[in-house]
Length: 284
Image (cartoon, rainbow, N blue to C red; front, side, top):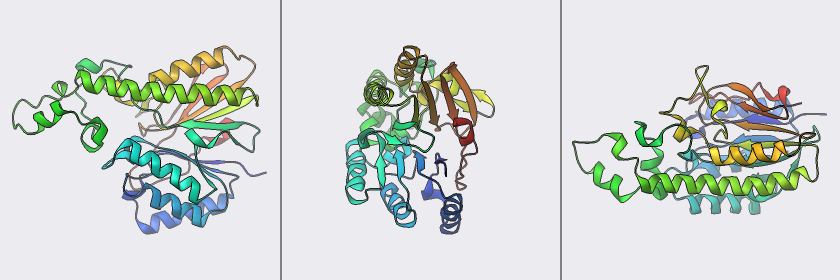
């Protein structure tokens, strides 16, 4: 029996037509039972076009979550509505937060949510990191940031990371955690094994780059801690069941066992060179 195939952070808007065709051919050659896409498909104006292309070329379920880049140059409600519309148009496209659990060939049920860097891990107040998210996603661009951008001087990124933004990021993390609690609880009631597809790592220990985990400066923007709290809680209460989390976002590769029955695989990525993850056999 064929197995699922996992891709994370393909950033297809940075990929040439030729490389995208090669990727689709590689997927055909794999003959997967399902394709799992872990967010950062493209941007708000194009992610749906690329998913339609995948649905046209492939004849298996295509299960996806959204990453932060998928909201660039759009709003969060608009992009999520586009994801809903895709499911109505193409039955094989499954936006996991609203599709319901998807059976995988290894007997596990697949659920998912993109998550969000929720400003809880590390030290948000002293972080010098200013993600493009806070400029390119309308919902995250505050009046204080607008004022700062209109000034040439005094553009210390720490002055941008304000209370308004912190609370908005925490709300997005809480929304992801609430969704995952419902989805995972439902899946655990039906199956011994659950696979969770995410974009943002739910644990700091799974936020890899260049062989190391994120420091206090980067972690607030790259870990969905609220989701991690929920996943750890649910699996601690179900020691005879197993969960594998597939995530990306930080473009670094790594594996960590959070609990004896909770493993997190983080996929590597490179702009312009989307690749099938080689970690999938570890899931089974």
